[in-house]
Amino acid sequence: MKKRVKRTFSLHHWCGLIAGMFILVISLSGVILVFDDDIDDALFASHARLEVPAHALHIDKSIGWVRAENPGWDIRVPALPVSPDEALLYELRQGQLRRWLFVHPETGEKLSTVGQAHNRFSYVVLNIHYNLLSGTPGKIVVLLVGVSLLLLTITGFILYRRSIIKVLTFRQKVSFNSRRSMFSSLHRVVGVWALAFNLLMCVTGLSLAITVVNTALKGGPKEVAVPQITTPVDAAMAEARAAYPDFEITYLRFPLNEEGKIQLLGRLTSDPSYYGKFYSKLQADYTTGELGAPYFVRDQPLLDRFLTSLHPVHFGDFAGLFVQLLYAFFGLMPGILSISGFAIWYCRQQPQQEAKPVKKKAVKVVR
Image (tube, rainbow, N blue to C red; front, side, top):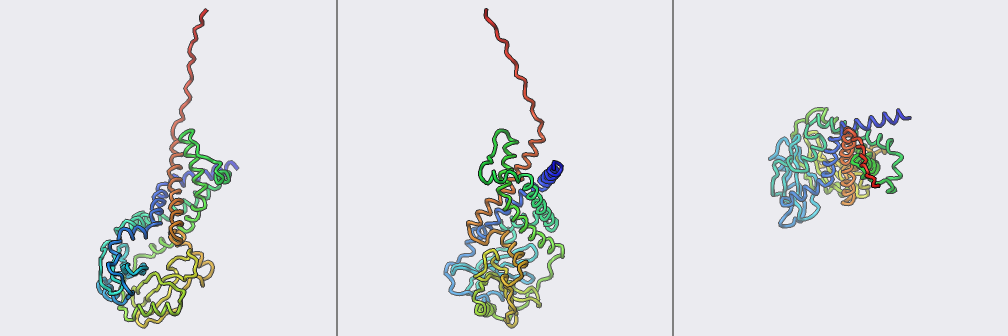
């Protein structure tokens, strides 16, 4: 039994030392990314707000010139305007490059351009979180860090399982008797409280990391040549809403080549929030406007629904501000565990100071 505990501690110890700094970086960047949409909204509010509210949304007024002026770019509408005073945003992608076009939703007039949207704060943080700003090698490192965090979570549970009830009932407190005892008890308390969240982030994060690495290893993106879209996009969206009144369109993707389709991404209003905002979809032919068979998450096999829900659950933006704040709070804990774990190791490396002998003072006896 002692050997098993020793091996478990050794695995926990070395995983923490090797992956600790990466876990800290991924933890802090993840906390910021919980609020990435809010950050973008705040930083680009002047671009996105209309002086005069629009009365309608007409994609057809702008998609033609957007395509003509930006050959070779993957064209998307990442979010449809939700209020009359909000501009229509086109996001153009070319590898890691991003370009934003803010357009009047009713007239199709170009309002402003963010030529290097890939340099915005939230996107830089996203790249830190996904690939440590190191491309494909960074994506592989992030995947390995995710495996390390999973091992740390499992071994931490084994090592501290007897403390779980004490911590959750607030009977286990942080000791301030010494630096080592302080960091050790802090590590135990935070580790227990973060156990379920860390496990959730490991499972969902590994699913994402495997997808990201697999895509990266398949090679670079194919050449993009968006064909001329001859069908009215607005009519296709209206037909989709009429055929499926429960389907809410939240995201548009336009074909990358002649074999592609117009993709109307969104969600069914009856779906649970953890299915995400754009994982269900309808496809329309870009020449005829004919709708294809729908792909709704709720109609998929249980395994597919589970795997789909892992992605929005990892992002933490599926259920409002309260859930975002919870994610931010618990998202700090892997970073705290990295720091406290390193501090415990550092304290152990310091030589123990021997207690100095107390000299007895001679006492004069008066006779």
